[in-house]
Amino acid sequence: MPPVLARVVPTTRARAVTTSPVAPRRASTPHRVGSTKNELLRNQTTHFSRTLRIVQSSPRSNDGAQGTVEYVTPDPQTFLVGSCATYAVMTAAAQVLCAFAEVHPDVRDATAHGFNADAAALWMVPLLASLTVAVTQADKVEFLREVKVMLKEGVLPSVAPLGALGILALSVGAGIGEEAMFRGFLMPWVDLRLESFGLSGDVSAFGALATTSLFFGALHAITPAYAIWATWASVLFSIEYVRDGLGSAMFTHALYDYLAFLYIIVSWMPDRAPEASE
Image 1: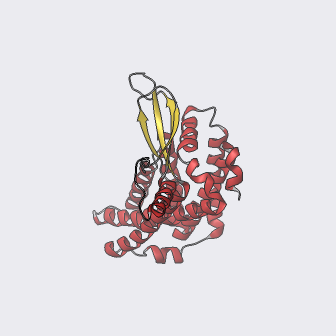
Image 2 (image 1 turned 90 degrees about the vertical axis):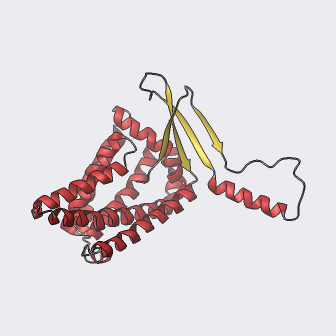
């Protein structure tokens, strides 16, 4: 799941404002040749770099004072392009790191020779079951409500307008990029390092799985509850990688992200559901 930018703002009322990095043109600016073209270019830049800040009241202060959490959500197309570019870099970096650290098989070979569609579908069951519980119980359990608010205000405004194909591209990028880095490189590399310290194969394998999953959870720590869930999901992906191959883990991760986004949008943002099903 892609990260969300959030910060605590010491104010007591909710507000929603749209900001733009492009300063307004002064009325007294003299007309120059090419000014119309420059203005069009500025308008395009404003469209792609516009930031929507949504501020929601929430008691966050340690002293009991009312505070607000401000979620900064980028323009959907900018978010998609930036996320996919990040995942592409992660995939390439994982392959290069495998060659540099002498990790065999590397990402390319592990993906090509490790794919089991039936097993990948079965690994979806516990993930989708946990998602269903989280979505249906979000209004009844406080820590699930916190995740719901964060996703609705901080992530989905950038994801829902992408439509089915955009969400699919985002999900495939996450499935390939994150699995290439965490399971394709990091997990076997940690395993090799632990074995080099004289640990047994079972201990080093368990240590690699735990280290990779904790790191994965920490990078997805948009809320404490979500960090715990992401750590658990990483354990499942790691076990699947060991049993059924890297390709299977990538497939499960990508398909789960896609279905999860669609399910959450339909359940929590029904007014945006048509955009997600186009």
